[in-house]
Length: 315
Image 1 (cartoon, rainbow, N blue to C red):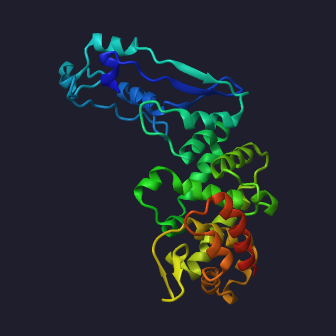
Image 2 (image 1 turned 90 degrees about the horizontal axis):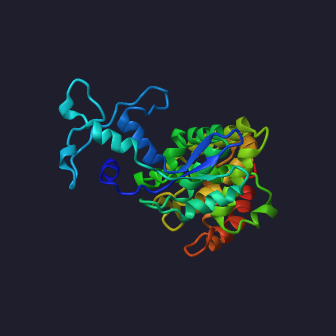
Image 3 (image 1 turned 90 degrees about the vertical axis):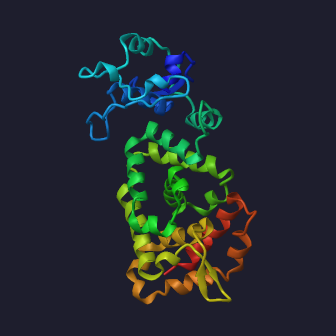
């Protein structure tokens, strides 16, 4: 990034969303801006304290950048020259402003189309940016739910899905579908757009029941911990009477959402309810096996298996 500026290579534009109070939220270009701020020593961490300024490495075209800093008053040899600093200060970055009054889903479409100098963002990375624009507190709240140790253990995602925020998408699926009316379940359509619209609606909702939803989420995974543990979302092999393989999203949708829908009644009768046997029964249920296989889209799967989970785990 710094090399590109010094070489005079045009920097892709920054997209910002303007709030009603006139403040800009960065929609696309956060990494570019953060790199510049961190290099010159102006970037702050989440605690508000300045981060340590970056030290450059040599590049193919500018090997002289090795060990250089923005400015080091104690060692001019490791500082950029005044001319180099002025060159960076005078470089231009175009900014496109998205008006707050615009359609919020248009911001989602923008992310889908932007491909400015990097890999395309995943759908959940897009949603996270949109959520920060509409309700930063809800974003941090969802991130905190995703750090639940039992939840993280049972979904057992590898590094890449975690980097792509798939864990946050699973939290969002829980919040959206846990108590959604069956008529709305039939209207899912494109899952990505549906989740985005529901998330925006949640973010704008006055009096959103944070404590109730947090309680449902945490109690669901406590219930799973007490009887299923790591077998919670793995495939049950009926013939071998054994849970096998890794995390399955269809199992999550029928089991986590089914228990989440009934969690209060289950918590009252957990000692008398054999959840392991109920989970095994799902894998023998034709409604589940018919609608959870490969090739079945979420649009077709969710309206079928979410109600099934609610019925199976009815205490």
